[in-house]
Length: 444
Ligand code: NDP
Image 1 (tube, helix red, strand yellow):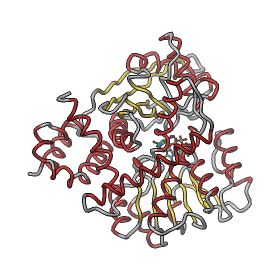
Image 2 (cartoon, helix red, strand yellow):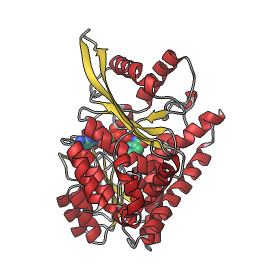
Image 3 (tube, protein in one colour):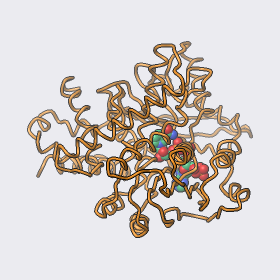
Image 4 (cartoon, protein in one colour):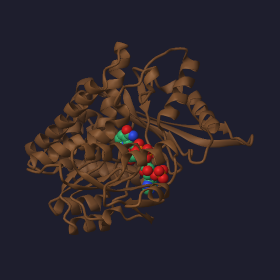
């Protein structure tokens, strides 16, 4: 049996009941076959694949907090520190009732390669809790965040592990978490990114993932003789990534006609009104029905359906496994030319395969949504320098990083005879750097 198959079998046995983690490991290892086969003897001896699929540590803890009725509630907290070969652990915190160890491990594993692709010195980690922020008062959110940090602070630090936001964690939550860390540790350090601008945050961090997704997509299209201007785009999600992806797509001359949330979706043939979407989602934290109520050209539909709309470019920006095989078929039938992931692993393995086999340019999230973590690393640099860069400086660095990521993975795919397979290219380019660092650092 080949080394990849052997390790896939071992990982499946060791991680039973963790489907998301196994899906991510399978996708990555399958696409690494050419590079692993070319170095099989060395990698086997050094147990590279066994080490890269086993987190450095997995921390799970109780998070007790008191709700507005005086009732004690208990959630479970997680931080998975996956690999710090090329820098301190870096990756977001997710607050969502679906959070479990499998999801945090899949996200932490993917983060290792994504962070490597940015070319910045950051390792991979991820964390979060099954706490549901929906419908909670500000005081309840603060109580949860303070309790969560009261345990987490032991394991993080500016040179050790630097968490950021993810689903359910925006500026408000980062503020409460930072305040509690500072209070317990008594130090003022860049221990979290995504901070407010008055206390060490970076300009353009809020926009970075969505903007970066579009810079990447623009470059991918350009290299394949296409232009983003004039294209019709379908976006899913209506959160941080989706909103700024829509905004940048429009700035680049595309027309975005859909967005969605966890209950329904919008089709707006005249183009999504970003200012209205921000008002509904960022300010009022309301449902998309409010968008439809204020916008005569918009149709609201319950449930799923974004991918049934005809478009040239599809940008899934909501959550994992939201673009399924049938969705891929509908997109191909409607003539889609590119799918670029804004969310982490939104496309299932079968859907990805179908899109690639049908000639669709497919950008995996670990490359196309790396703008968020890249700008978080730029926030860390600014904190270390005790300086703040202008919006334009950060945005232009972000654009360079995304363009370079595209060319790195394009080159890696060509080097191993996989031209046009950007999934393989991203995994190989991210993997090679981490493995070189692991080999240099010995058995650790
Ligand atoms: P937000 O919480 O801001 O937004 C998530 C959006 O997706 C919301 O509109 C939410 O709907 C919707 N959503 C969440 N879960 C589901 C579900 N199960 N079914 C349908 N819709 C759902 O998160 P972000 O925008 O920050 O993150 C979105 C994705 O991007 C995630 O996969 C995240 O890991 C990834 N990502 C985020 C980065 C960042 O910088 N923020 C960086 C890189 C990746 P509702 O409004 O109803 O809650």
